[in-house]
Image (tube, rainbow, N blue to C red; front, side, top):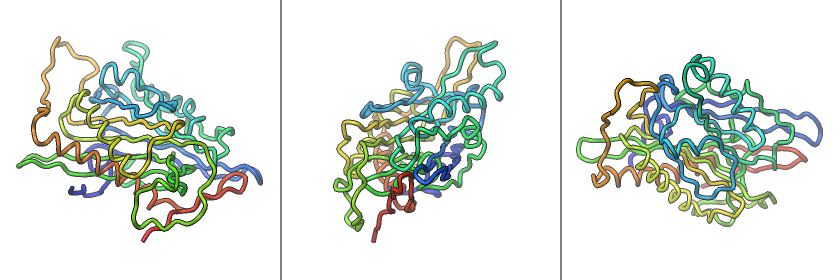
Length: 328
């Protein structure tokens, strides 16, 4: 399918991505190779203007925060934050600090707040027990968000490994068309999964031995400007799992494979006086729906490969090395 202009999740108008990357060597055996990535759903106030969202847990070996309320109410009211497993609490706190500063009514004259944080385990390269990520890093990632963002070994992807080589952050987009109508589906993936021998890529030339590490994970974020409700977004998220499977993984026992999808075509105000609301929703049986499904599959597949293409060889704790994959 046709790629978006940027071939990234930022092709969905209003979406931006920010990173904070940490790289330090506190001792001969320890290394900080980690960070934070923030995905902003639109350019407005995320709490006051919520957007439809859904999640799909392909394999639940993960420590993600915020999915229960998303699946109950079908709304996203914060950025989607990504980091390493032991930094979820710090990123949650930093995101909370940002949101409370921007919204004085939260927890006072109005309701509480549902934050969303996803994680992967980067402890092969990163001294994760040091918990180097602080709340301030989460705030910095949000504040630095832009449509022109880096991919590969950056942000939350700094210490991640995918298919036995260096992984990290990857993104891609596709345009769904039917007649004069067209919408964009953008995907961002945090890749930390898969055995080297499983990858399906005909020009894969990596010959370095794969690191001996625990089962990994992947967090996939699917964004669209198509007018979909939460139920339809869950269907879109499920198709992203097909794109993941196309790259070769069979989803290992210890892998946390979680997909979050949202649409910023419609914003739901936090407060309203009316008892009812009307919305414009794409019909399930319209040809555009199948195009959106295909876009989710293709953009997810390419986002995963982009995380490999943009990565660079990275040294980590205990002298470990994750080599960049070699491609024709």
